[in-house]
Image 1 (tube, rainbow, N blue to C red):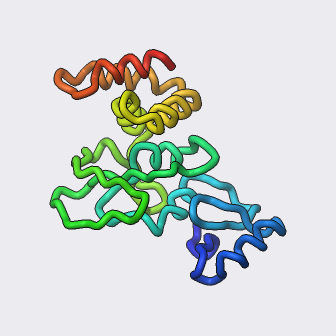
Image 2 (tube, rainbow, N blue to C red):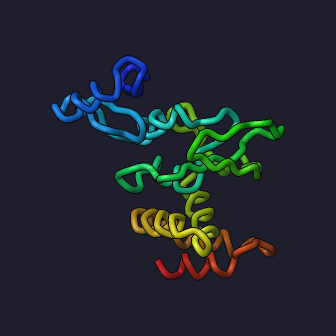
Image 3 (cartoon, rainbow, N blue to C red):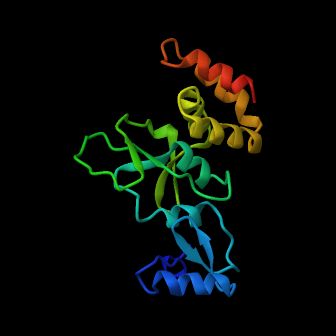
Length: 178
């Protein structure tokens, strides 16, 4: 998706102008941005709308990655990013963003619209591991599992294959319940 087709408040148009264009049917909301209604809201458009909160060297993960992969109509209230570069760096998280400093394997993320995003399988696994302690993660896990039934068995096998994994039994229980 070309960046000129995504509008952010304050860049070219003010928030009231964008709201007016939305009410007139000229634009619709995608995350924090606005785009013309004749363009599909695909994964690249959703990633592009995250531009203000993306941190170089980090991939969209957890609920954010689930939303990018097409789950839900609105982005999560709190975004999650996980490190993809080997060297740790000092980063200040934007407001509403949780940074996870655990390095992702190269097999666990893909590039969508020019930005790294955890794969659907890794996203479902991460959400299942967090579901017992985070209601938002449990909600996103259920939504993702409902839209991608084929991945639930693979996520269960992935969790079972790890001999030592914190939250393993709770994650398996959550995955088996969907």
